[in-house]
Length: 292
Image (cartoon, rainbow, N blue to C red):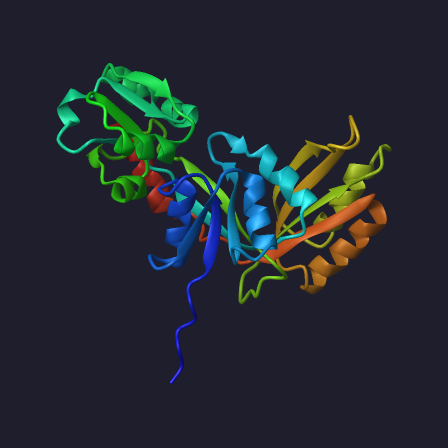
């Protein structure tokens, strides 16, 4: 008789009920153990010291773009990407049970308030910036104030026993956050894989072209490329690349070896199972919702 392996302990940034924690539950299921961390740096520390088995790091939002701090930390640390998670961000208006009809002001993280600006204006609600989405729910539950609502996840509503006044109040329906699941060592991948790496090239004409050419010559599809300043060398840049395939595939392995001859340095962030692609019918349905 085989025993079920224990659920992992996964570190994330924020309070319980954060969207990062919602993404962890989406990926692992309800039985997962989560470890809240104050800052992104502490996610890496928790995994490196063994306090957590994995860390979930947000790296990109479909509306706001890349999260620069996350990419800088990926370069500084040696944790490998174990997986990719896509979370559809659905903002919800929450309040103290029984107070739904009296809301005059709404607290949340400034980004969440901005993403719900249309809803707040239509309902003449005053936006009050707070340090965190889940934190606004936690603080309201701890110190109830009449006439106050918060914007946070359904998980936050459940965790802090708040009433959901309205679901899905975000202005933009195509709002997804991409996360990297981080851990020690290489991920075990079966089937389709995606690879992430970072490199720098000499400051000479054609150097970036020659670096990227190694993928095109082998018909390897680049799904993302982005430059970031090198933090220890002003006005020099590193390039983050995602491509379809595993680094151990023949074509990908040859491309990386060729890249090593063109670049100042190359760091492999990991090969991992990609998140399931968004289905066309899902995108179409969200577009129809936005037009209503």
